[in-house]
Length: 480
Ligand code: AMP
Ligand code: GLY
View (spheres, protein in one colour):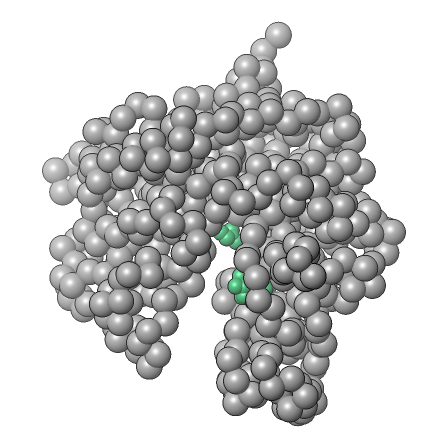
């Protein structure tokens, strides 16, 4: 009998990691990735899904590809395809696909509705209120600061805002001006700011928690420590330069990114805290979603939590929900998965997740993202010679990448933003295409060993403007 054919829908490093997990299954013969990137065709059994030589992006074309190739199972990475209804479309066509249906993506797509839903089913969240009228929102904020002089607010645009829609405020003035900037023309996040969710700013430790579900059974995944800020805390000079070049008057602001790296296992997510999160948050959310909306949630789910201390107890509260795996969290979690990814996916589809006992390698994984950093004089990008601050701000792409052939064979290199092209001499060459370019993942018996391997190898990679944080896997208390 020939093996299964899998289609992974994702353009980034998470997609590389998902494809790699499927490729490790002896049941899988071929993994296609759409739209993928250069890395998708550099792993054994994996290739980019092509239609007439071009990567496939649109849902109807993905359906045609799945039919023509006889794809047995499709797995979706990013939120965009899910909220566009890829799962609904594939299912209607009788094609098997893992991921939440469009109706469930509201959990990521609307912060206001999600907080109302969580409150209604008794899942712990910060004190919050939604507003569609800016004057009422400002009145609420002013009254909050008057009644709670020691507390603060977080103002969140309701809709998707590329992960930047939540603004943590430190004064009444900041909260009021943030409401104004989000809700009144020219709206900072466009239509996403038609409504705002205003929350009490909580103190505690942040934790990203991942789980998988078939709608009935919910299983916790291994977790990862993530590093969201662009620079390590000791890079004051680089932070100020970044802000100067970005035109940001707040020179000390260490900007948020999609993630600069991470490691797994998480240093302080123990089994007690995992049980508590499962009992008070993950299971009630999945069951409650079915009860309240009638729609079953199936696939991966990721909770952004604040672990608050209340009366000597750890109380996890939900700050946000994502309907997918994190990137780059997937790149350090999935290499540790020993359970067959194809059987796991089949169990999700068949509603038999209760038969799965997830197994994980005890090895540590450290992932460092190499990003398109500051470039003074681009050498390959044409005539323009302006200095750019680098990701997460404006950055150059199309820089040749060298040194991947020197990377140790046991070190994983997942590609976030790369493509093959042809250099001036007509040779095939790998180029950067995005802000995050590569995630280098070293594995070891200890965090220190994995970290040493990762950094020894990331140093072998070169492209104009390459930058990475040097502290991934160090000082967990400082991770941000
Ligand atoms: P969100 O987009 O809701 O995940 O928020 C982005 C970031 O803002 C979080 O990772 C937290 O660091 C911070 N944040 C959001 N909500 C709160 C809150 N209620 N209290 C404290 N920090 C928050
Ligand atoms: N690393 C954060 C995210 O995937 O949303």
